[in-house]
Image (cartoon, rainbow, N blue to C red; front, side, top):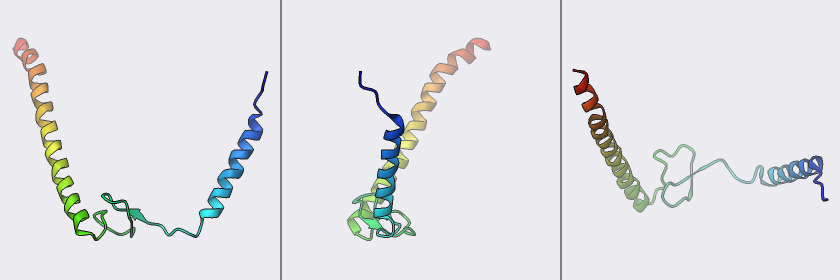
Length: 93
């Protein structure tokens, strides 16, 4: 039967993570990524999109779609709640 030495596995994992951390530290400046094209942008960029006009337009359109979907979700939740709780409340009266 083949037994796994967990201590050795943990040591290997720790050594690999240390190697990766030491090789990438200092080379990449802290940054965010554009929500649309995923290009690196500054940390202070708000909204989180690059300066490309197509990305700005798409972010605005996506924001409008998200707000509209949130409104429709609340409308359907309200209809469901009323159809479920309405008859129960009418029976109590």
